Length: 450
View 1 (spheres, helix red, strand yellow):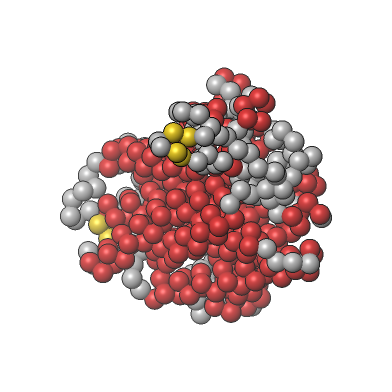
View 2 (view 1 turned 90 degrees about the vertical axis):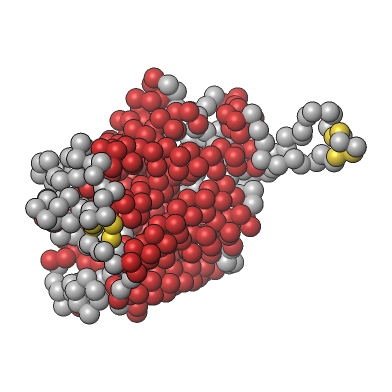
């Protein structure tokens, strides 16, 4: 056991955990004032539920010894984290529990990411059931495919997942397992729940752009733990991942802002924040395989590409409320496939992509891994969502949606607006508060224009 590596990974796990409250702020600011609490509660609900499921059986599903074809870990091997508290239980140079914690926060944020696609219209109770079922039958198996390497987490003779070992696709920190997975699930749920009342007729304005910017900043900060922590040690690979994460994200923000400026005549704060997230998503699978210059190129492509991709929902007619598909699915695809083009053997991953003389060998591996996760996640999520809609009811009523999901699902409002306190009473009447809605506008104005 290396105490430096252990300290680094535990600190990175804390950074990744902070990303989910950051996501809650990012998503919460993007919705209308009548939906902010429900939006944030879906992220916090995922934190609460998935942390428990991860300990009970999720880690074993993901990192237990493979029980057939690289598809699933042994669900009983580490049930309740049995046997992992001993000092001699190690993953690489870490105590196993440090690795458990680090991977657990990945599971949490992957589930939380999906919620942005169904903002304003989902029942909170059904969301919580969905989160548990989806993590069990989609995320935990896919994490095994991508992150479980042979002879690593379940002993020297253990077998891991098929994407990591048999396919040998490079996904350093979760372009497939996290972002393509969540983005495909978001698309499926958006189709199951249908369009919001007034979609494309009423513009739907983010109620607090400062919250969006704050959330994006916390995501950028936490993402250094996400990517550099995936080196599973305080080493040169972590340093390369850190620098690549910094520059790809900056380039993506510039790419998004430049696209807005050319297309719409102005660059927006929402575009800048969204570009940051697009760059973070794209560099996630590639941060160990690219040079810093290659990372800048990838970031520029991701920023411009995702800025254009958020308009796809208007072309194809699906209501992805907060552009999870346009940013996470498309950004994840750009980053995962980008490895096949921009990887250099000089980077820690040690593989040359097409543009560095490596041919298409790595590119086809990246494509197969990306498509496999996309199709699996979309199909299974559509089935889960449809079943919950038919049994429990996933979407709130039209009346409740118009009034506001915060009031109907949580009996609360996010802000006490137009109410002044006088002597302990309010001008709106003792014991009451005024519920104020706000005019709606486009999430990304350029997408509506396009």
